Length: 365
Image (cartoon, rainbow, N blue to C red):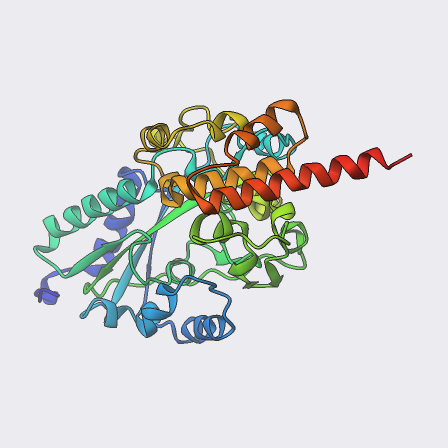
C-alpha cells in the first residue's frame, strides 16, 4: 500500500466525513472495523473441516486470507464497511409466489441488476472522495469479489450482528441489504461492534425447507437451496429435490420469516428493481427460453451465474414439484431429449414424480 503522511490528517473528522460521503453516494450505513478476526477465522476453519462448504473449493483454497485482511492486502489496518439496501417494493408478495407451484421463485436480490458492479463503482467513488482529502492512500475495494469475511467485518463496524441463519441483521434494516468493503491503511477510529439481538427466536431454523440451518449460527451449505441452485454444478441430490419446491435461483425463506425484516426499507435504486417480470414468471414460460433468450434476458444479472444448463436443471426440479397440469407435463416432455445429460436426468426425475403422484392419487379412495 502507498505510504502517506499521517501527521497532517485528523482521522476523527475524516471518519465523520466518510460516513456522510457514503450516504451521499447511496449507501444506507458506513462503519469502520479493525482487522482482528481471530475468532471468526477459527469458526471458518471449523466449518471447512466439517465439509459444510460442499463443492465450493475456493473457500478452502484461500486459506487464512479471509480472516487476515493484511495478508490479503498488505498494509491494511482498517476496513470501511458499507451497507446498501436492495429490497424491491412489494417484497411481501414473495410469499404469494412461493405459494403458487406454477410460478418460479427467484431470490429477491437477483431480480435486478447484478449488485457487484454497482457497489464496487460506488465504493471506488467513496475512495476517490477520501483521496481528494488525504492524497493518494493505500486501499482496495471489495464486493464479494475476494476472500473477505464481510459479515464479521460489518458486525465489527457496527452495521449489524450475525443472526442464527448466518446472515447479517440490522435493527434498522433487517437483512435485505448488500455489503461492500474498502481495505485501507488509514488508521481511522473504529466503531463499536453490534451485539446480537436474536434472543430466543428460532423461526429461521424452523422454516428452512431443507434443514440447512443445522443449529444456531450453523449452516450446512450442502443442504442450502442457494448452494444447490447456484453454486452446485452437478446433479442435485434426489432426496432434496422435493424440498426445493419452486425455488429456481436461491432461497429467501429465512429472511422472509425473520421478525427484524419488518424494519427493512424498500430500495430506491432503479437498478435493483425486478426485470423481465421475473418476480412472478411461470415455470413453463422460463423453461421454454432458448439459450440465446437466457443470455439476453439475464445480461447484467446475477442469475447468469447459474448458467443455462443449471437454469434448466433448476426449473426441471421445480416443474417436478409443480401441480400436474397439461402445460407442466408438456413442458417437461419437450426437454426429455435435451442435449444436456444433466437436464435430461432432472427432467426424467420430474416426469417420474408426476407419474408417482398420479398413481398415488388414483389409488386413494
